[in-house]
Image (cartoon, rainbow over all chains, first blue to last red; front, side):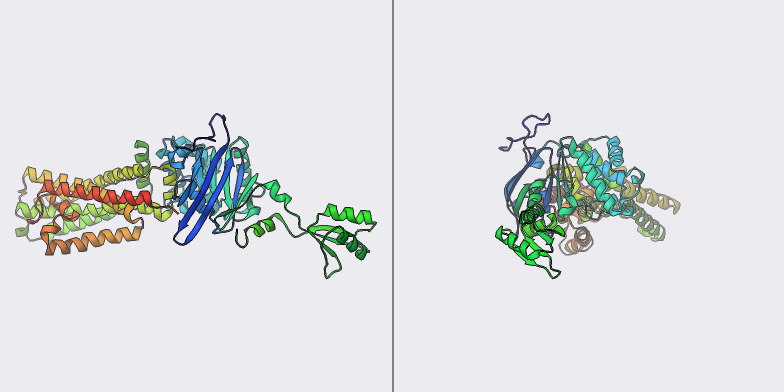
Amino acid sequence: MGYTHHVLDREGVNMTYVVQSDSLSKRYGDVLAVDDLSFNIEAGTITGFLGPNGAGKSTTLRMLLGLARPTSGHATIFGQPYDHLETPALRVGAVLEATDFHPGRSGQDHLRMLSRAVGLPDARVDEVLSIVELEGAAKRRVKGYSLGMRQRLGLAAALLGNPDLLVLDEPANGLDPEGVRWLRDFLRDFASGGRTVLISSHVLAEVAQTVDRVLIINHGKLVTESTLDGLTARVSGVVRVRSPEIDRLDEALVREGFVTTRSNDHALVVQGATRERVGDVAFSSGVPLHELVTEGSSLEEIFLELTSGSAS
Amino acid sequence: MINQLRAELLKIRSTRTTIGLLLGLVALALLFTILTSTLSPETQLLTAQDQLSLLSFGSIAGVFAALAGIMLFTSEYRFGTIRPTFLFNPSRNRLMVTKLVAGALSGLVFGVIGEGLVFSIGVTFLKIRGISFVMTGANVTQLLVGAVVGTALWGVIGVAIGAIFSNQVGAVISLLAWGFVVENLVFGFLPKIGRFLPVHAADAMMGRIEPRLLAGDVGSVVVVAWCAALAGVGVALLTRRDVN
């Protein structure tokens, strides 16, 4: 057991990494689903694990949680492989699919069969049902649940052991906007006490308001590891500007090294600039402006740019 | 382990599948026993051997116990609950042992209900028809214990088959094809081999229903050996198989 350095001590001593992935790879036949993936997740953070469908997110999460064996490399949670942890459900809560229920079993019985397996009292089931606001549906069979209710029941199961780490695979799938907001508030609240969340999604916008950090993977490889602020800083985009003295402004911008083009409606489109920079150039050239807006390159477009094509 | 067993027993109780299987067993046991004990000519119900044949029908509970055992794994794979189950029980060896015990306990219930019904109804109808009950106490004990314990062991075999196949349809079809076709063919043509196969070895536990069967104690050992072998294959596959 050589992975016990960087262990998150429950008392908060020597707090470093909650999750460590070290050169994790998974091969299915000819397909390399996860390719030499290394990353660390710090305690107290909400990390978005992002990538398009088929990027290897779910496979990675399954390897972290001991459901799939890595072809090579290893993953640890709280310094140990998941299945070496003493009663891991009391430290890690995970939801991998929104549909992991027997349709003929009640939500309450689903939670009870899990809580009993780790020696938790039935009263804990009632507590988590209350946290996810499903008390009223507890005795109903799951086949009568909406997708949003199933998502919340899955979350309730993950919360049974009052874990320090939550791992959620695409939890916003199928949720209505109200459900997404509920989930966001819930995760913020969960992490505010120093606990850690790892949340996967194929849509950055779904988690952008929730996460502190992003891990972006594509074709099983790490593309970007950054804080959300770091990613936002990459949003350079295009500035669209109108002026009655468009030619003078164009010359001034080109002198400053910007690449410009004229749009069909006689506006000037400045590549790789910020509004502030274009405004400064116009001011110093004495050119009046009638319009100055940032266009294009949103956070989502940066994400798409990072995850399109090969991740070499 | 006790906690995990409580969880597994709740899984069995908390869906309608088990109730459905129990109702199926009760219906079949009632139908067969009432029809056979009322419609068979008296001459076919007079000897201890005849009466053993009639009253051993309770062993059909083994099929239902095996189906219930199969569901303990295949239902989890089918509905995806295998993921939370593994997350809460990461030791797959321990989970296998727990499910084997749960399968045996549910099999025990199937056995008591199945053989209990067949025996009590069969004996009652014999009495109503004025046919003397000639089985010895020892034979009755072997019949009842053999049927109930044999059914419990079928619960174990079912769990092992479920772990081996993981796919519900494949496991159920394999069980039924084996039990109702393959074994009967092998026993019919090669009884010296067929009597060592699980269905016929389990039948032997209830007494010499058929003269070519093994002795009861040998039959018990053979069934237990089948349980161990199948469970061994099941746990080997379970620990190697990824969950997607």
